[in-house]
Amino acid sequence: MKKVITYGTFDLFHKGHYNIIKRAKALGDYLIVGVTSESFDIERGKLNVRDSLITRIENVRKTGLADEIIIEEYQGQKVSDIIKYDIDILVVGSDWRGKFDYLKNYCDVIYLERTKNISSTKLRSEGIIFNIGVVTDSIEDNDFVQESKYVSGIHVERVFSEEQEVAQRFCDKYELDSCWNDYGEFLSDVDIVYVKTGLNKRAEYIETALKHGKYVISDSPMTLSSDRLRRLFELARENNVVLIERMTLVYLRAFNQLVWLVHSNLVGDLVSVKCSISQDDFDGGRTFNETVCTAICAVLKLLGKNCQEVRTNAVRNHDGEFVYDMISMKYENALATIEIGTTVDIENELVIIGSNGRVTIPNDWWNTGYFEANISGKEFLKRYSFNFEGNGFRYLLQELMIMIGDKRTECTRLFYDESVKIIEILERINK
Ligand code: C2G
Image 1 (spheres, rainbow, N blue to C red):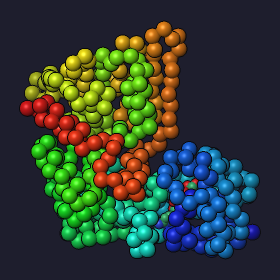
Image 2 (image 1 turned 90 degrees about the vertical axis):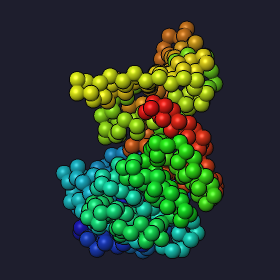
Image 3 (image 1 turned 60 degrees about the horizontal axis):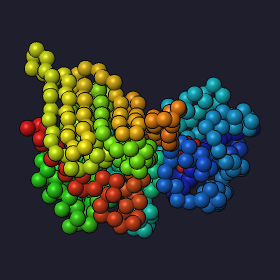
């Protein structure tokens, strides 16, 4: 007897789920379906799951295709299940291609092509599933597509690029439903647009999408002009939609907790904030402006918007190229320093010094689930650790889903005036 196993959350049960269970069943004589428990989904960073475990199991049971249903409760369980149930084949959707190859030592692993066009009109009209379209000029996705799979209720459906070939290759690579090179047509059937083109085109795409009443996520910064940014936010308000920038830092539990603790006097009065970034380490080596925006954002969140003076000291090499930058932001009672290793390698860290101690986020502080506090008079470091998975994008998407659900038109994690302030400071740096 050939035994097959497949796993999933099976939230908001749809035809993609039905299809994979049906095709898995057809591959053998006995089918086991593993449904993820709530705590396992939390552990693996799956967010926004709407249906309870009981409902999700019930939906799988109702297909009449599963001979047995089990619960997947912890990392590593797949190996144990395969041995315990003497499984011949593990089946999973092609969005996981390669990820379960390590199980090939135990059984056959088959990736079945995932079902396209799963977001039915009904689910969309009821505001349960939202279609996302990506606007791009390259075939890299910043891991956005994979991250979106961890947020229930979001479906990356289509891609737009001015170049047909880029759109087509992006669509094939990430198994999206459709690709477009007419922006108007592309916008006609999306709820949320993610703009990830080069900076020179971003504002234009954002503006058109907002005018069409779409929610927009954009890479940061959206524009280098504070006036233009203000107009974009006005447009979002007029159209009752959210414009949200991809500043993942402000969506991270660890960073928010750090800000709250520091503002609750954890280390006394703040004296200094130092943030250092090697540009190469920052999200695949993004540009200077993109890198520096995150650092300014961290400073604003910690010290506020009343920065009195901004100074930059750039170091160039013999050919006149920037290699290193030190930016200082002076506050009435504190000083922030931002250190950017443009081509040189510097140690990434964020250090907050207060009158009564120090808080440090070591390493890639803009993408973290961890920080530590060193409080005067206390012998031991106090360590804070939070669940953090992927590149942080999923936490932004989760917040966006909450905003849409609450019909909020402004993001409270990063207020519009904070975004504008970041660009005003950037304007002074770039002057
Ligand atoms: N699926 C599909 N087509 C879709 C959506 C999902 O074929 N349009 C497949 C997925 O590839 C997966 C299964 O349906 O094999 C269940 O999908 P999810 O409920 O989203 O579960 P997932 O997060 O993919 O978890 O241990 C859990 C597994 O790793 C899969």
